[in-house]
Length: 144
Image (tube, rainbow, N blue to C red; front, side, top):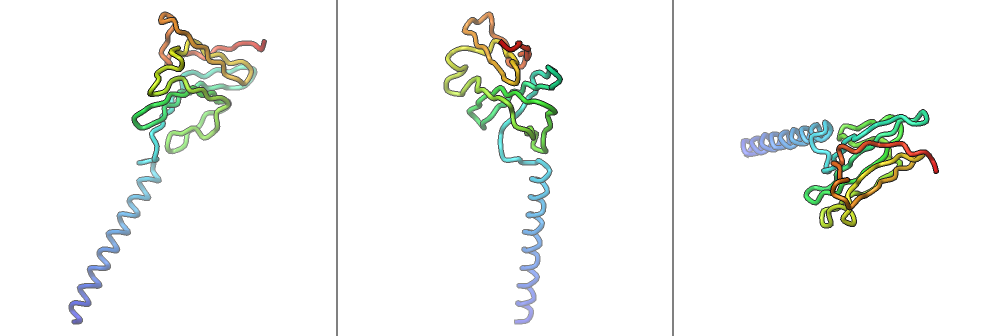
């Protein structure tokens, strides 16, 4: 009986050690950015200085299989956390296409203007005006 009890406790301690080890490994991996639990990506398209302020045009792509692309305008220093997510909130966001519909209203982004602290996105249905989003340049438009 003592031998069976001894084997039981040794087995229990080994199982608890394995569970604790797996738990610590999981915490370490998640804490080091192994799995941030989302499928968003961010790409800085353009950065400019205007009126003593720094602005960044960022393309955010969100979704696991059905992707949604969003143009975002950030002001000031753009910093990313360990999951590569901007740590500050955007001044402006605009969805530029959706998975089921493609480009919004069958138009594509043509130009992007900075007017004050606001972003103005111009669309075009003319194929000759179409640019890759990664090639957009943030242009300054004076206040009207």
